[in-house]
Each structure stands twice: as structure tokens, then as C-alpha cells.
Image (cartoon, rainbow over all chains, first blue to last red; front, side, top):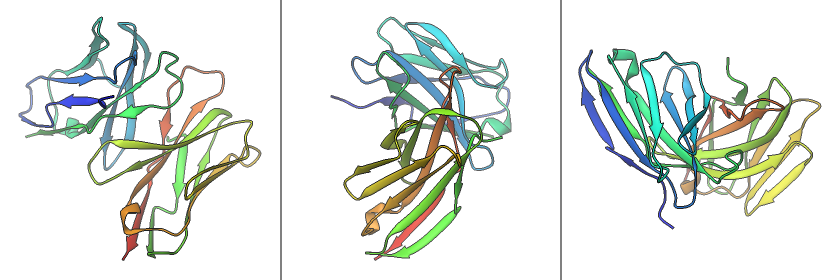
Length: 113
Length: 112
């Protein structure tokens, strides 16, 4: 089976812009979670989608949003980018239970200038 | 604050030696998982241990869990240069929504 894929892999944006990141889960996985990883805060949970519904949400402002499509692919959007949004954004998928092993993609590295 | 915290923050050893890293957490959990991350890449799942288990093995990996002390350890035996990576533990709160919380990781360097 193909692994989790994320596009794009690298992205440079300027403050105030918005960005959309994409994640394709492993075939058959219906739960997709998003994480932000920075040197200062470590790996932080953004949100989880299951069957096109946001099931869990971390402690991030409303500028961070996401959605999931019927084929389980997911996108996350960050509006009005801030310098502090520079990070590695990781997507992970898991089986329908969504409560056990997560399989991570390679991440999208976002740099906000 | 992080639910899980790894210790030490950094570890440097020679190839062939064993590496031990620890994870402490604050609340009762359902599961604890260990992941590895090579520099700037995605995380790779290593092992999952449930709250009712005390020890688990997978190849050169040995994980222990002490729920009374709210701690876990990951032992890598006969380390190799390819084991150089950051290692994270992730826990999910018992009875709560499944939101895995990661520690800040242990950076392991194995010198050839």
C-alpha cells in the first residue's frame, strides 16, 4: 500500500496570505489528523477528521481549519498567516477506529516571511 | 503543557551500545506509543503498549510501562548509526477524546 502523501512538500508564503495543504491517507484509512511541529512547541495536535467530520480539535485559533472529502483525502487551511506559523505540518492517517497507530506523511514545511 | 516528556533530551552513544530513553506522563492513559523521526521528516510508528501491559518487544526494541509511576522506557539494543533520530512518546488520556499528546522527544546520535 502506498503511504501517506502530503503536498506540497515545501512552501514559502508571506504574512497575511493564506495557504492550503493537502493530505492523502493510506487506502482504507478514514481518520486523518493534522499536527504542527516547531522547535519551540514541539509536536502539537491541530485536528482530526473522520468520515468528513471534525471529530477532535486541538487548541489552535480559528485561522486554522480543515476538511475531509468523501475519499478521505484531507486539506488544512491557514488564513492570515503569521511568522509564527512557520513549521512542519504533519498529517497522519489511521484505521477506522482512529484510536491506535497513526501513519505519518513526510510533512509540508511552511516558511512564512 | 506536554502530557508526555522524554528524558534525556539528547543522547550520544557509540554503535553497538544500548540506548535507553524515558517518558513520563501526567494523567491515566489508554495507550502509550513510541515514534521515531529522522531529521525533518514524518514520524514512524515503533511500538504501542496498552495500559494493561508491562513490557513489549519488537526486534531490538524493548518498551516497558509502569502505570503506577506514569512512566515508560524505550530500550534500543545493539544500536546502529541508522538509529540516529529523534524519539517521541505519545499518550492519549484515558476516558477522553483520542487526542494523542507528544513529548518533545529525545535526540539520539549513534556514532559509527
